[in-house]
Length: 105
Image 1: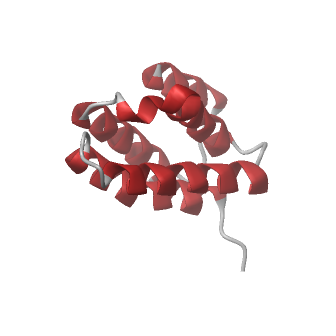
Image 2: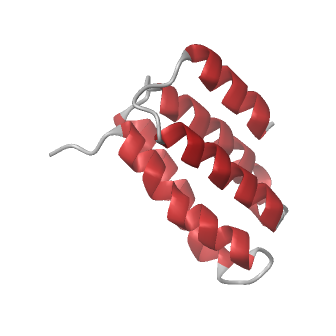
Image 3: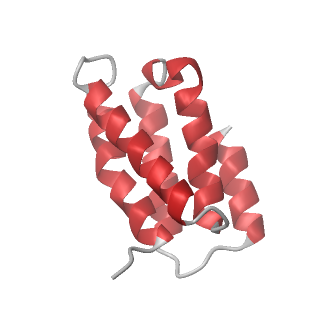
């Protein structure tokens, strides 16, 4: 059975929660790596999915020059809350995608 884009996005939640608790510590790299790998899988499997658009906006921000290191706990918690609100829905609209990407910026 193929995992959906929503399920892959949901799988990011635990890593985001962990990352929000250990920013600045060496173990944060483990969770950041896990998040970035899951994001690439989502992109490879569901390039045109609305969830992928949002996740890849975060991916680009985190991956660019290893910016994930500079983010603070509250930022990861905010991303966690945003993704949690999105994955609770069956489908998301283009407006919700645009608003989520703006929120990430």
